[in-house]
Image (tube, rainbow, N blue to C red):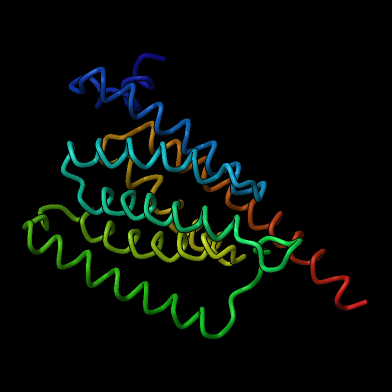
Length: 212
């Protein structure tokens, strides 16, 4: 049992207790945020804001710039998404779940490419190309940027980006020594799959009256 425990958590032996506690709190609020997102519940944003603020601080301390930028962007988009989700499209209805149209798909591609260029420039400026994980960070950052933008706009396809990014992040964060965060992304992957199915069902139910 001890070797298994050491394999997963030995990397925390040199961490400050405060950092470990903060990571656990951020992970818990991250779980809540993704769960509320699956439930199409507005609480996705306040819980997400708490998680991202903590992760921005921790990732800055650990000099993981790509991951830090992801969470800083999450924080900004959480405020934007909070507004969109509470905005009424008419006197009775809030912004509904919809699928992306052609324009939004093209915008997603531009956001993805723009993020790749931006993160590459940041890593180049700070001379952070010292590990192969930096290249993976660049890609996952771009994936999550698109996913967060689509979620803020309440688009079904946001879940596809979350699933892809989460699957990549599980082994990536474990390699970086952030076991709790790695486990968080494993659970995120499972929730994201169910989130996609739940939103798809919700969208289908919303469309049914219009087809009848």
